Image (cartoon, rainbow, N blue to C red):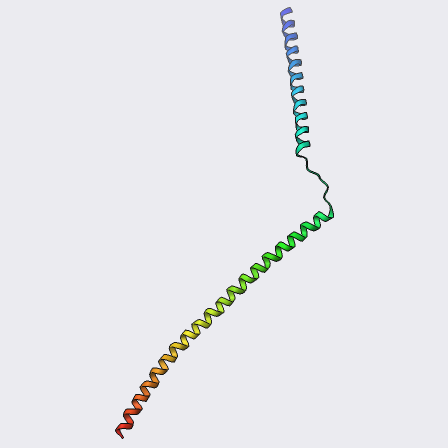
Length: 117
């Protein structure tokens, strides 16, 4: 019995020692966390001026990129129009060449007929 009592007392002393160690470790953790949070803490004062500057910056960025997109679209559509016109010019040049050949053929034919009569 006495041995059992001694074991119980020893076990309770160990438990108390473990609890105090864990409490001191948790206290150390909390203290360290407070110190670190003080170092990395940022000011939380956010005024209307900051909000206005943020919105103004956002609007300026949207305007710049919107203008860039508008210019890219205009360049694209103008290049499409230029390509269509170039195709029409090419077709007209080819048609002009064919008509000149027909005129030459008709002139030659007319000269031959005039010489015969």
